[in-house]
Length: 272
Ligand SMILES: C[S@@+](CC[C@H](N)C(=O)[O-])C[C@H]1O[C@@H](n2cnc3c(N)ncnc32)[C@H](O)[C@@H]1O
Image (cartoon, rainbow, N blue to C red; front, side):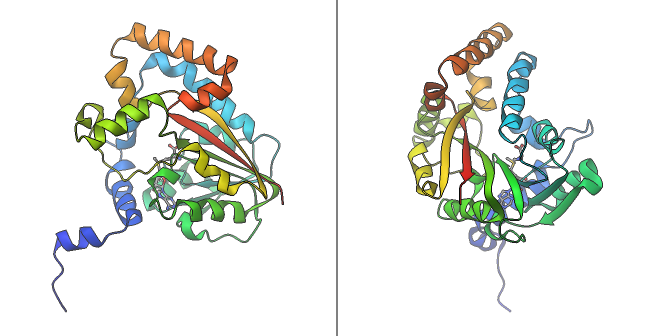
């Protein structure tokens, strides 16, 4: 058998292999204080963010209210608080994630209420129309750009007509992402943190390919990523002022906020 060097193996790895390796070896591994690497890398916002975070959680959970009994979490990771809040609204929670560590954490948190699959969104081990609702937060943009549409079709296939899919995604045309992607293109994006995972972001127009049999709505989710916030909001008074402003602005101007915010929620209602 020919020798395969580590370098060759890495270049042969698919995006999915690399993402799985990252989450199983680093992302969902807790340090001595019980903090997973994902928290340190992507979720550090500071205390002044708490009120905004809670508002976002409540808003996302409200999108999935009254849709039971079964919800699918596609890429639940370590089942953060917003997922737990949504799980409370359903009788049964189906968790599907490529990371074994993620599924172990979900099983610990949800116990017998959950059904667990170490599985890819490319091929969900679920019958057609078998769930009432689905949530996939911060997952799709970590999938190979040529496969993201297939993942969305899988979510639609598994969700019953009349059901709803909620996707948290990044908006590459938002002002902060335009600057960040330009810095990345010029290879000077170190200010915003070293890229640890594959990402590809489609703009809002891309989502219209799923309209027709489905109703699509794009809603503001979050104005800024944690790395952007670390670079731009170094002082607590700035964070407080920014998140207070963001809460008021998105309530008064939801359509404009969906264009300006770094993260959007894509709401897909499966009509038929
Ligand atoms: C950034 S984390 C998001 C976790 C959680 N949803 C949240 O909002 O914090 C991405 C998760 O998606 C999973 N994932 C990435 N690609 C996937 C795929 N193709 N199929 C299933 N899970 C995937 C990863 O293993 C990881 O647990």
